[in-house]
Amino acid sequence: MLEIFKKSFYILKNNLIFIQPLLLGLLLLMTAFTFLVGRNIFSIPKIVLMLSIVLMFIAFSAGWFYINKYGILNYNEDDSKEEIAVKAVQNFKKFFEGVGADFLKTALVYFITFLLYVALMFVITKFCINVFGEPKILYDFPKIAKATSQAEIYNYINSITFEDKITFVNWMIIVNFAASIMNFFIILYFAVMSFEEINILKCFWTAIKFFFKNILGVVAIIIFTFILYVCLNMLSVILGTNSLSLVILIILFTIYLNYYLLLVFCFYYDKTKNNSNNRTELIGEN
Image (tube, rainbow, N blue to C red; front, side):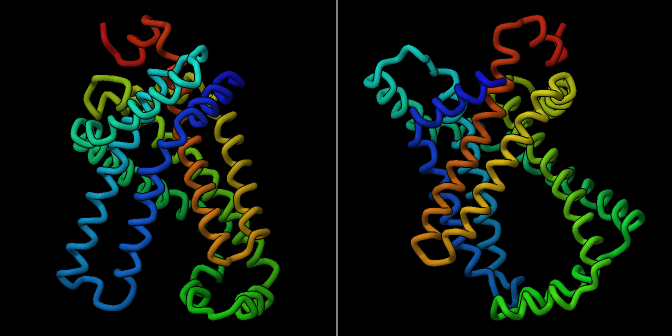
């Protein structure tokens, strides 16, 4: 596993240009969502904008997955600096090729994983209600969202009973645990889609089998990326909320996302590329 962590780091370091479409996509999405804030969200212009955002997100994702795949396929630890630079540009140029090649598959995977996410959150919510009860903060969330200062938020937190705080913490532990596993599986699903020439349903089954067959590696990646995520959040608290800090955090978060993607992609590719029998077993071919 250590080699996969190192390899993913070096691929990202050699292809930092990969974060550009992701960064641009995030900024465009953030800008677009600002126009959706407010009343009458179901007006024709806003519906058109929402559909445009969804299509744009799928397009950016398809191209981003594609160039990261080629970053892995073209990786060679013995490359010179000149060869690394040339390959980085060549990989990046495949972005629009990836949009055209994988747009439909990416859209279908997102649709399937969205349904899975909804089903998972429904089950988790029912489980938490039955085991821990309902935390008061869930009903007061609109009030918190409307808070105009940190003091209002702190005053609200201080008004919550200790029992309700414990209930909310238990909810957050379960929800974050389930979301971490689901997020990993979604990226793994896209890794299978990227490296295998099989239909989306077979990709899903392949991803499930790979997930459980390599559960120790899955746990290692989830724990490692969770630690990175916590460190990123701690850094956001240290840096504050000024404009420069926000730009730095967006860039760091983009790098984090790209590294997470490469970790899972490398994990799948390195576990299957050199063993044709294992690869055949995963895909389900005879």
